[in-house]
Image (cartoon, rainbow, N blue to C red; front, top):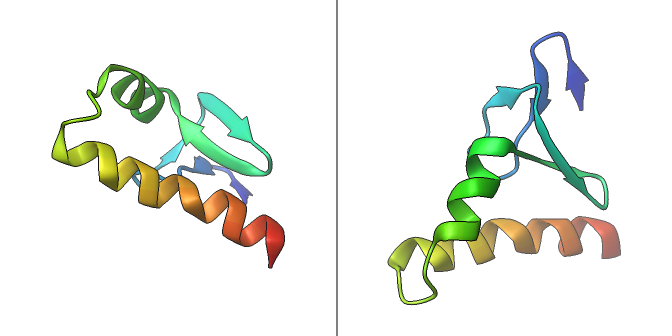
Length: 61
């Protein structure tokens, strides 16, 4: 999970150093900020929901 390049974000799949962990998954600062400001009627909102589902699927696997 942790590499010299940082942690892999479950939203954008890029390696970053700054962000948050939810359960055991990393979300970079940029994706967190975008998610917080995305309206529920925006098409990208559903993309974020699908990506976040990975946290619960992996935890309960």
